[in-house]
Length: 110
Image 1 (spheres, rainbow, N blue to C red):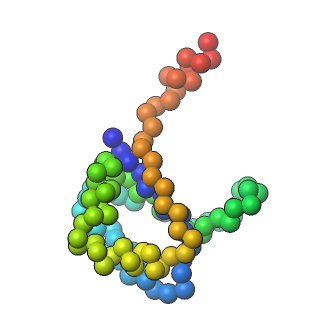
Image 2 (tube, rainbow, N blue to C red; image 1 turned 180 degrees about the vertical axis):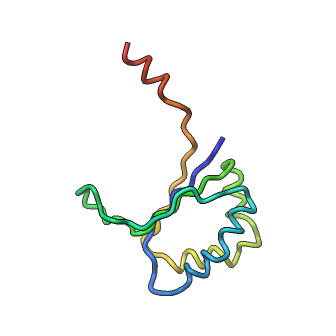
C-alpha cells in the first residue's frame, strides 16, 4: 500500500536546500519513492491564523518501510542535514493511502 510524505516548509537564506535537491531525487528513487507533487504557495485560501509555508513537496513511497529505509540509509547521513539547514518552519507529515471511500459514503446515504 502506498505511503505519502507531505513536506511543507520555507526556504532558508542559503543554498543548502539547492544542494539537497540535487542529490535527493536519486536517494528517494533508490528506495522506490517518487515526487508526485511540487509547488510554491500562490496564496493562502483561509484565514486560520496559521502562517502558510511557501513550498510543498508530496512524495509517494511504496510502503512505510521504504520511507524509513530512506531515512535510515547510511548513504544519506550527510544528505538530511542539508534539508534541515536549508529550510525553516518545516512540517513533515506522513499518510497512508486511503482506500476508495465512495462505497462507504453510498452506504451512509441510505
